[in-house]
Each structure stands twice: as structure tokens, then as C-alpha cells.
Image (cartoon, rainbow, N blue to C red):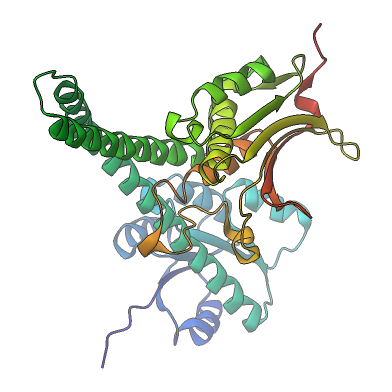
Length: 364
């Protein structure tokens, strides 16, 4: 019979009756441990490593709010969730608990079903946060560790390709090595950027920036292999519009959306980028419209998800990161990116929407 690992809950309470009630409700589903004194709490949390702590704030020997603050300051318990349990049900008591770092508040007498539901939700949330952190750490380690060998591969591939004495076939091999190395380096850079964008308290370099300059810069960075598709490109972004934004990040967002439009447009198609003010909200919009095959309706809800690849075994290079980065960049500016299929014509339109409070009055 397989061993099922139970999630761990630490009950901090000095009332034996309360402890018995919680053990009766939770004991069959979770591994439980109890603590009542401050010293016992510190020792047990270090060794037991609970997924969740149920903390009574009305103990005789200790102040529950102070214990909550102390537990939240422990880096080893960074992902551990804390639910305060108390007979105090006033709003001010709840606010004090939240300020102390508690994740939720449960009033006595509590309903067993509500307790089980909250415990389940917060343990699941802890697990998701831990997985996200591991994923970010792995991406960062992988990306940083691959940069040095990739730079060597790219550098030597360039030297080989530029060697006039090298046969044409071998120059072609060097070009393939160079292209593959550049693709891996691009993926590595995207992974690091996405990981950094996901961090809390991201620092932005906010400056008044002319949007037309960002569009021009992004347009010049479209890979030549896509430009060679003879796509008709039209830029009607206002020359005067200035936004208070992180220009480097927004240029990246524009580039990735344009790159996507060029990549999936057929030969002799058209791609346009336009700006407008949304009448209902006053938001500033940058819209990129292509005339490709459009997006399958089933893909639209997950298009901006991280690694949102429809078919992993047959996906093309670069799928699953660029558009997720665009979404994160727009969210850091309190904006959003949306996509819709064009009707009745073919293709789709991506729109970057900026809040109206980021718009600096137009300059002459």
C-alpha cells in the first residue's frame, strides 16, 4: 500500500478543549502538532516545518499577534500560511491580524466545514507558491549557467563563418550552429526577463517616452528572415504621443507583438501598427493587426500563459514565453494586452492598452 504524505499543521493554543476540537476535525486528514508556550513554538516550527499554522491570539502566556509577526519574519517559514483563530470578531481585530502578517482570520465558534475549506485552500496556495519559486529558481540557474557556453558557441561559429578558406558547405554548417546558438541565447534571455518581471516590488525606470520612437526601434529589430516574407508594413502611430513608462520594457513588448505578427503572417500579407484613444475609457491603445490565419478560439484563453504551448512535441521555437512577457510588462504598468480575431477579414489584432493616467499631454 503506497505511503501518503500528509500536510502538516501546527496548532498554537493553550486551551486543551480547543486543541481537542481541532484535532477531531483535522486529525484524519493532516499531520498535527500542538504548541502552547513561546519557546515551544519556536522549537517546533524549526523542526516540524508546518504547511499551515492555526494560531489562537488569546493565549494567557503569549500575545498571538506578536507571535504571528515573529513567525512571518522567519525566512524558513516564508511560504507557511497562518490562520488566526479568535473569539474576537470585530473588524479592527481582523485588521490588526492582517497587519501582523496573518493570511486569514477565523472566528470562534467556527464551522467545521469552513475550517476544512480554508485549511485546504491555504495549503494548496502554499504548494503553488513553492512550485512557482522552484520553477523561477531553476529557470534562473539554467539561464545563467548556459550563457557562458552559448557565448563561446556563438563566437566561434561567427569566426568559422567568416573564414574565407572554409568550404561553402562548412560555412552553412557554421551558420546553422550560429542560428541555433542565438535562438538558445534568446530563450535564455527571455526566461530571465520573465522571472524578473514576476518578482514582487519590481523597479521600473519610468520616463516620459515618445511612443513613435519605441515603435520605430522595435520595427528595426524584426529579424530579417521575417522581413524577407515581403510583408506590407504600415505604421500609423501618432508622432506626438508621450507616455510615462519604462521605455525599455514597452519597446520589448511592442517588438514581441510585432515579431509574432510577422512570424505568423503568410507571404505578401499585411501588418499594421496603429495608435488610438479608447473612447469609453480614455486609455491609449497600440494595436498590431495582421492578416494571417488567426487564432483557434480554444487557444485564446491561454494564449498569454507561461509556456502556453498547444502541442509541446511539435511546437516552434519561442512559443510560450514572448506573449507571457508582454502580459507581465503591461501588468507592471497597470495596463493589459488583449487579442481578438479579425472579422470578417482574416488574421488577428493584438492591443496594448495603457491607463489614461500614463498619458502625458501631447508635445508639439
